[in-house]
Image 1 (cartoon, rainbow, N blue to C red):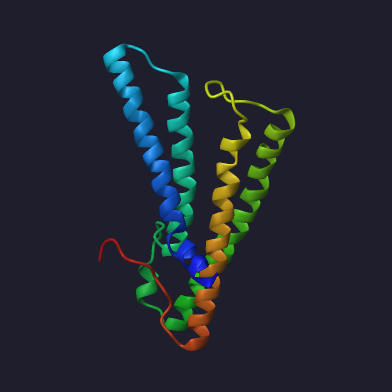
Image 2: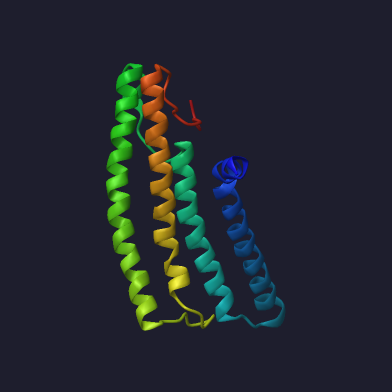
Length: 171
């Protein structure tokens, strides 16, 4: 069971991102061909692309938290020691965790209202809560990754190791 968990932990967001990206590109391709060759387009295609993009954004945010790939200003990190660096990262994770918990609560409220009144999308005519669920799902993943990041930093701090800083895009 731990091998399955490790595989999901390592590649879960990647596979979800791949699924939604393929869905987005495939639907967009079909809609462009239909529009250009047949002078016909559907409202469901536009909705599929829009909602796939929303899921992509929120799952990508969780993947960025896992890899510490989100945008940050880290100039001060070059001038502080290992212990202060770990504490600053842990402080940032705690602040982001608080923001994510608040956002999770309020985003879940919109899903609940949509479920309660059974609102449907205009083109697909299915429950809008499936698509509104992207936001709390994304924040749930972000919270999970923030807790992992905090525990990893705490372990590194206690073990005297350098804190994980993620891969740098530019150096």
